[in-house]
Image (cartoon, rainbow, N blue to C red; front, side, top):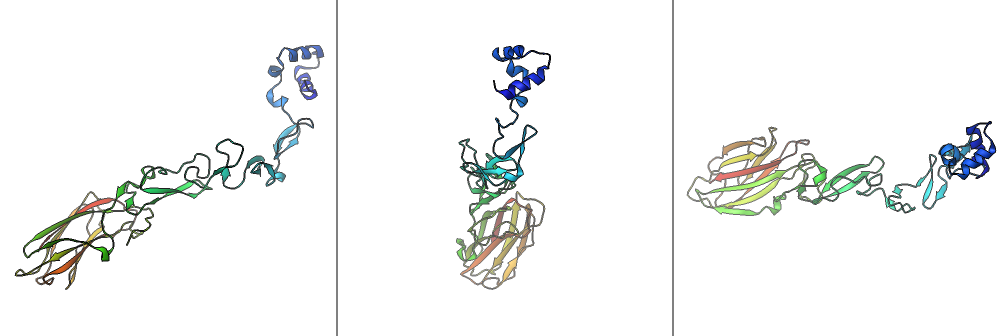
Length: 297
């Protein structure tokens, strides 16, 4: 039994208790019961404080003068504690600062995982380690329509978004008809390498072409543009471009239908007609809107 613990025990029990009683308590193992742990571990010359602290009135207090000084492997004094320096941590309890706190698995703190970092279709990124704030970057044509990063970028867009790459989906004779279906997806995420993606609206337009042979008819177009599964905000427009003129529908909501008929001689026989469906309203409106475009030639 060291002198400090013996003196502490003497003060706690009182001056009337004999040293023989105190020695007896220590010998029987009751010393740990009689002497509180805090009192038994007070600092002294024989029991100095750990790194980053100083002894004041026999208690270890944070020592700000030691901040920034090394205190262990890979660690420095910070506000009275021996901590890992910078954006690192000892998350594995190995005694070394081997964990990077800028990763989506440990964003700013041990085990503070970014939502969706293991989900398909996107990459969770630790955007601000100091606050633990994460963001989600979607892979190309994958979209986080529901705004929940926990399930990643849950929907896939299959449309063609670059005008020059628009495919000829069908050909039709005079009096024929065609119907093309698709989906406009929108979200507030970043989409690297998506052609014509507009970050303001959170979507990319869809393009396709139809070859119209024309002939003995009037070469006019009767077009019905229909949207479903969306909200009530006017957001979607169809643009039709022939070799002679450009025609546009009204901007309709995500659950509406609009029909328009062009003039006689709106296109030349045996030419390509370009179609474009686009979202026009800005975020925060984001949704998965199905559309159908029916054309009677």
